[in-house]
Length: 86
Image (cartoon, rainbow, N blue to C red):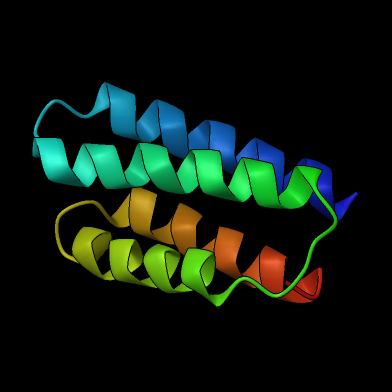
């Protein structure tokens, strides 16, 4: 169930990022990479992957001021992954 919630959050994040025309290319690229990394992580045997979580937290900080909805989605993704033991 938590896996489905993370997938739903990822879909929301992708939609938010793609629909926001004011994102710089680097931020958009980082968000898409995070989406792909988290998707791969939850599809495999979840093991501790601090790199993915670190990138998520860095992206969350980037979004905090200008893109509060995307920032909230990333925060919820990180929280959900933590609850899954990742």
